[in-house]
Image (tube, rainbow, N blue to C red; front, side, top):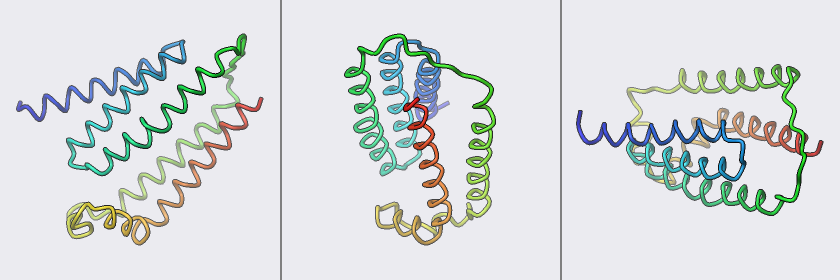
Length: 162
């Protein structure tokens, strides 16, 4: 076991433990702070994989944008009390459909990827190369993931409205 493996397992442990605490913590502020450590762990794993661009985007978009927005939203709405959150079996069917759709998209993209020729598909991991791949080879997967995120956003807005 070399130093690379030790660092990977450290980032993996940080990511998994903090993600577990995000789900199990009852205080939403603490849950948001654990989410911060989860995002940092994922960014560390991206760095170890050699995906520096994705690691920086992870830090800028998720840590810099979404998490800070979540923390401000929680801190500004802390006066809301006695909010009843219900989780019934009615949400299992849409959740199962969403997970199945996402798994199908991931499997379709994995089957269409030529793993042996990945260096020839993207000779340099620049922003231009990533953009060209997203628009040319992976346009359908990119659009399907955008639709999936839109459906998730509509679902979150409808749940928040009630």
